[in-house]
Image 1 (tube, one colour):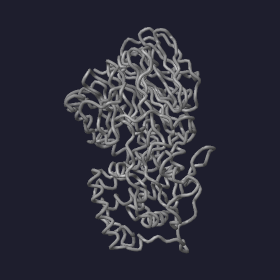
Image 2: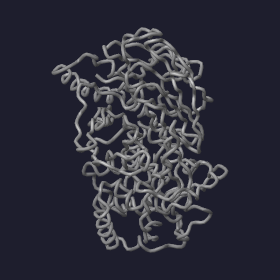
Image 3: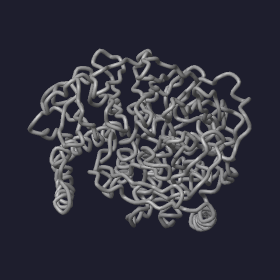
Image 4: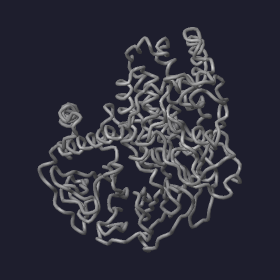
Length: 606
């Protein structure tokens, strides 16, 4: 996988674009910076999930949601969009500056497509009456106009990559985006040198074009939708680009990475304050107290990023054999002590909490967060809590059977990037991939490793018989509105099936395969849980809305009818588990489970 998959590279190259969008919404540079940082921190806390899909759209969704969530302060009178109410302003900025097609503009602004069209029409009429000059195309840039491109506004080009967008343009587009806004000065409606692909077509990661991409199979009911009609206000688009350029160039990498790191430290500290056996009324009181403590800790740390004190006691090292199933895991940190993730100190090792409430540390595994990307090193737990998959201190990827103490290696070349690991429900199979051309699956019973190859693969789910649901994302030029699509296939002892194309955004939250291996549970772009026939791609059952607090990931099937989903809590600091009946569409808190972290691996359930 290319280095462009790293969070730090994404922030360095694209955070100025989000700041310009926020500036158009608020009309104030300080408020814009604050809004962009908050949106990036919240969205990028689950970077390990969104990095494979549409990270720019995920950030925009959070940015617009925060802007519209409460009545924003009035924009300064001199701001060209001050005459527009917040929703109208958001609609025009998303359509004409960010160049989002109607479907995605409706998604980020929280409107139905029909309501979006009506709001757009009214906003254009209001803005035209207040500032008709914004709709006039100016062929000659005025003196003192938009500044020259600053270093870092666009990603460095690589051979075969699309040209980068100009400063002031829309944030790097995801599959499904509309054509880009015009360059400053509005020289032409057709960008030269392939700029349309750079802004309106190419996703933020630019893998090489595989041969024969254009000859993919015909779309099925879950293929990517056609793009909406292009906007027809080139003068306004160019004007918004010029206005957005008034936002001082700013790279938000440092405050965003600091914010993510601070929230992770707070969450780790809070984990140590809650007893694994707390139940009933006492548990409710603890949750209230912990919520208050979280706010106090957040205020106490301020912007300095000062480390908080870890738990007083470091658990004992886990023995080679352990009969008590693992319930969940998390990583602690070391205050004032250097803890290399490849050889972590005891205070920085994985903490494993068992069903009995006892806690152990996993001394054999690499642990912690990658210093550059803040992505947690991988760990996976089988659903019965008896097997762990992790990166060993020697660099290999292994699966450890706790009841017997047997450890087996996954035969795959070690990539520099961090993998995604998943297991079959029965814990016999563990698969990993790096979002690149190669993945692997270990059959623990036989010790054999099967390899999976493609262009940009992800092994979404594994069945109890070893059947793998594989997504392979490729660049395309024959699908309107998309620069890439994902092809889903089932690979296993019974051969291959599937081969249908889907929008990569459908896989943003992961997938779970039903116990019978026939149905995939997925979350759509509008945060609805849907079920899909794994062999044909046809959707069935109820579409259940999960928009109370958003979605982090699809976890697993609990039964033939129920799916477990991880969602952020009301304060967006931690997570809770929701069970959804795929037939009736009813959902409820799982109950009996403690609150968990955004990226805490989950094992056996009580």
